[in-house]
Amino acid sequence: MAHLRIGSRGSQLALWQSNHISALLRERGHSVEIQIIHTTGDKITDVALAKVGTKGMFTKEIEEALAANQVDLAVHSLKDLPTELPPGFEIAAIPQRESPLDAFLSLQFADIRDLPQRARVGTSSLRRQAQIKAFRPDLDIHPLRGNVDTRLRKLEEGEYGAIILAAAGLNRLGLTKHVKQVIPAATMCPAAGQGALAIEIRENDVAMREHLAFLDDVNARATVTCERALLNAMGGGCQVPIGALAAYDKGDLSLEAIVASPSGTEVLRERGTGANPEKLGAEVGKRLLERGGQVILEGVYKTV
Image: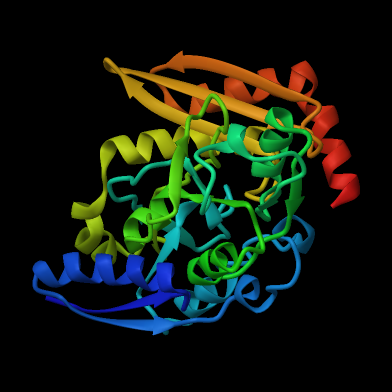
């Protein structure tokens, strides 16, 4: 058995994810250590993510440690990974996926419809902002950065009437106390890859690939591959107002996707089914671009 070094961000959620993978590896007889690596995204906490504009801002430093042989594998939230990895790396495993949906958290309101006019809602995601605005244009959307504990504290201290977070992270950390609603994809289409983890290694590290093969979930890999193919076809990163959710229904792979203007005045939605995840994602992405998504995205890139 091997001694494996995991590179991880230092947030509470990142460490939960790395410890989860570590425990599964230890069950296989490996010894494991976790090395905390601070990324660009962790250092910039006072700017909305969409305005940072750094590709791989939560992964670059970890990949540098991988390339330098300081760690053997990295555990990421998959939605943080650029759709095209830098040369020299590969995704060795995508474990079973948690809920891909977003959650509505509030101390006193049961769902988005119950919020009073001009209520303050916290999120730093353009995708979430756009879909909230489409549904409730009267709401006041404010940036919300920081780890999960920080965001929850700001909600509890009354800075926000509600906040929107990924359901997966809350479920993993057991911090669901203020979750009033898991938002259906028809109301808020999630980010590509949300709820999934990615285990990244050096390209062609055959031994590491074999150690991690048991973690790879066929359905998770197919759905995430489909969603990322859509994102790639649209030329979008994880901070643009694009949503994608792939799922299996009676053996068929389906994909629902949106692209929206940050103001929420335009929300384009497309659906498709197919057997090939990459082909399906590319086709649905192409249709969204042709229907006006290209114009929407060009407008976003000019303003962020």
